[in-house]
Length: 119
Image (cartoon, rainbow, N blue to C red):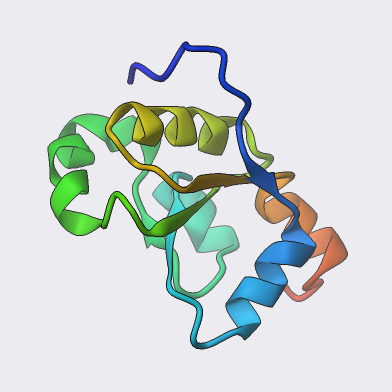
């Protein structure tokens, strides 16, 4: 996966902001989780589409037809590193409103929903 190396700052949202988005049923957002299937088996947040980074070759060409490049897109991983890579890649593919979820599902579990297991 090659990303945007232009040095542009990555837009991030907090897990508390994510909780507000998820509570708003009218929110027009796209949700992507880049964690691996074994990670999803442990912990997940409903509504996210799983695109494991290790399977990039299988899904990379389908992304423009799976998602609207102009819609707000939120990306999740375990701690926020892999999702930041995905955000950079999406921007390089022409996505215009991409946000990394800072702290990932680990922070969401700690700060928002303790019923989601830590791993």
